[in-house]
Length: 196
Figure 1 (cartoon, rainbow, N blue to C red):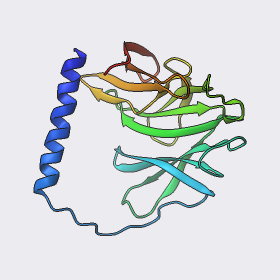
Figure 2: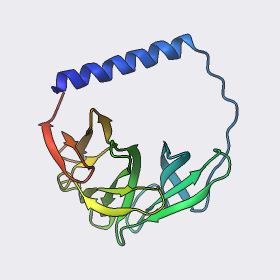
Figure 3: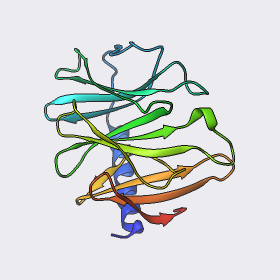
């Protein structure tokens, strides 16, 4: 499948979603806090998997910075009202960030994240490594699996026809993007550098 085809699919979904949103009036029914056990809880994702909602996010002492070694919390709920902890993932001495969930074609839950060495960061060389975790039930996780190229921050994997696609980026003094694909959520290969 070509990048142009993927772009057209994405554009069609975006345009369709925009048209639906314009034609439908949405009403906010309620807002509730589902977790507040850490000083800073942020950067969430939500996925419905095997009859339950799973929410992933970073727990830390603040947004980011030296010494703030965040962890990824995964919580779950059958009804969307009562939530419990499913897992706490960490990489000692590193800031684990931006947990993004997706359901893989083989039925496993995939969590994309990034290990960020906040204690040794520089604008010239960003010290981050993208990682994934996999789970068959959302409670026990295998990983971290170091994926993509060091220095590229890989975002959520989206699945289409048995393949996963994700965009990674470098930031700081050397901004770049790289488009990856995967079959298993553990091995990511480059499709294209700097897609625009």
